[in-house]
Image (cartoon, rainbow, N blue to C red; front, side):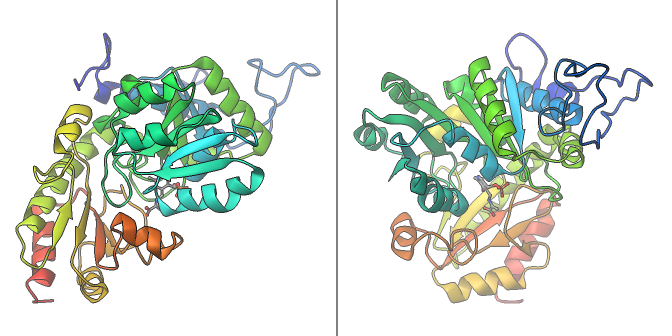
Length: 390
Ligand code: P1T
C-alpha cells in the first residue's frame, strides 16, 4: 500500500487537513465546537445550508470529522456515531427481520453480545464463522444473507480476514461486506480500497488516540449507503456530541505519526515476548511466526500496537498485568499510553466460556495495547516482571 491515496495528497496531509476549512467569520484555523442543539431559521422550514435545523440531524463540527474519515479511508462519505457499537449497529439496522448476517466469530465481545442478545431478538439471524477461511464464509452464506461482517485483525486473537477475497464472495451472493478496521486504523489498512462496502471504527481507539472520548465512525464509497446510515442515525439518535467530535478531529491530525510509533513499538514488544521463555506464544501479524503473515504483508502497511500473548495460566496473566508500571491495567486500546488486559475476564467476559476457549481466548491470554512511549522503557517494564524481579 502506498503512502499516497490515488492521485492526490498523501495520508499525513489528509490527516491534518481533510474536512477542515478556516471558519468563515474570523478565519479561525481550527474547526469551532458548534455546541448547540438547534439553529435559528430565517423563515419557516428553511434551515440554513438546507440542513441545519436540529443538532441530531446536522452539526458542522461533526461534518468536518466525517469528511476527514472519508478521506483517510479512501471513501467519499463518513458518518459519525456515539460509539463504535452504535456505528456497527447502524450498519446492521439497514437490514430487516428475516435477513441473515455472517459474522466473524472472534469480534470484540461487545459486538458479539449486541448481535446475539439484542439484534437477534429483532428477527435478524447471525451465523458466526472463522472468517480466516473463505470457504467457511461461503458455506455460511444463504439466500437471505445481506451482510458479511469481519474484524481484521480480530480482538484479541489477531486473526486476519482476506478483505479482497471476502468482498468478492459477499458481492457474488448479493451481500455487502463491512470491515471493523479499529485494530488496524486507516493508516495501516484501507478496506474500501480492497472492495469492502463499509469501513467501521471504534474511534475511541487509534483514530482519536488519546483515551478521552467514546465514538464510532463509518466510511463508505457509495452515496446511497451514506444516506441510509444518516437516516438510521437521525431516526435512532446515536449521535456523538460536538465536543467529542472536536477532540477526535484534533486527535486524528497526528494519526500517521502515532501509528508509525505504535507499529514500531508493537513489533519490538512482539519480538521481545516471542524470545522470552515465560511466554508460550505471541499473536502479532508482523511476526514471521504469525500463520497469516503473508496476508498481513499484502493487505496492511504496518501491524499496529496490538499484541496478544499466552502466558499459560490465569495466575501468570494476573501477575503480569497487575505488576507492570508503564503499562496500565485497563480495557480499551489504541491510545498513546500502553495498556494491558486479560480478555477472558474483561473485554470478552460476555462471550460464553466454551466459545471463548474454542477461539483460544484462554484465561492465560493477555492483550497489550502498545503505546507510543520509549521502546526501552516498555521492554524494561515487561522484563522486570517476566524475569521475576517485580
Ligand atoms: O467501545 P466502542 O467505541 O463502542 O467500540 C466497540 C468496539 C468495536 N470494535 C472493536 C474492534 C473494539 O475493540 C471495540 C471496543 N473494544 C474495547 C473496549 C476493548 O477493550 O477491546
